[in-house]
Image 1 (cartoon, rainbow, N blue to C red):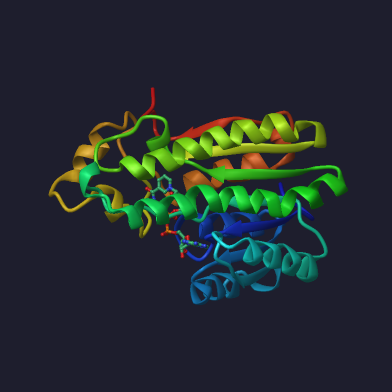
Image 2: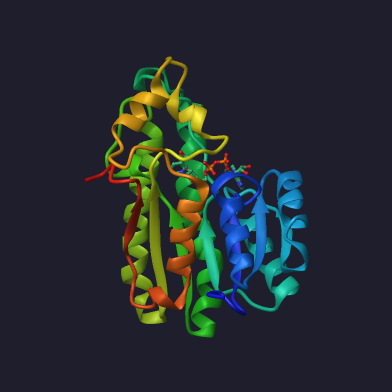
Length: 247
Ligand SMILES: NC(=O)c1ccc[n+]([C@@H]2O[C@H](COP(=O)([O-])OP(=O)(O)OC[C@H]3O[C@@H](n4cnc5c(N)ncnc54)[C@H](O)[C@@H]3O)[C@@H](O)[C@H]2O)c1
């Protein structure tokens, strides 16, 4: 068990990558708070994990929701060691001129402001206890953008830069901050990335040297490693889980 006695808070854990990270952490001995704006999804994911999981209603764009999620995690499990900033959204794949101001604002609010506010919510606690781990879910879109996902890609570039900035700033507090940059992953968000044009999935796969999309478990495996003691000397890394896409 690689996360024995660890306590984690995973945002956006009701679906897709976040749900698999929560499952993987529990399997490896952690207790996990699953926070999601979709409370029903979080509850159903937590229920399947038994007593080592608890669901929380949380909108990561709201500072007060994040403060409550941290407090509720402490009440449920008596501590917090790992924050996974996974909650994310996108506009549907389309030309940049068609992205509306509302779509731009919503994407930045969840993907960038949400990560920043969640870090602010845990850092005082991590400082007090002498350390902690923050893992941000970025994207290959922030490293090697494609057409049609302009605003989304910019949010993930921001997540990567924020990861490095916080890694430098928080290292004296023994707080490690890393990011994972998955390539297109089989989740409910995938059709939005691919867009409505036929054949996009095949075109996408053709650009990935290992010849397939990512599975949620590929990303969760990286999140497990980064949260574990095996990664004790890693901070500021952007770990590509992309079958070679960014080579
Ligand atoms: N699926 C991909 O191809 C892919 C690739 C690279 C990176 N990512 C990133 O992985 C992360 C997870 O995405 P996914 O593909 O699993 O999508 P998903 O839609 O399956 O899951 C996202 C979860 O986040 C929750 N969420 C959305 N807005 C929220 C908010 N304001 N507050 C709290 N929770 C909120 C949703 O309710 C959902 O449960 C995102 O950050 C996404 O950008 C996904």
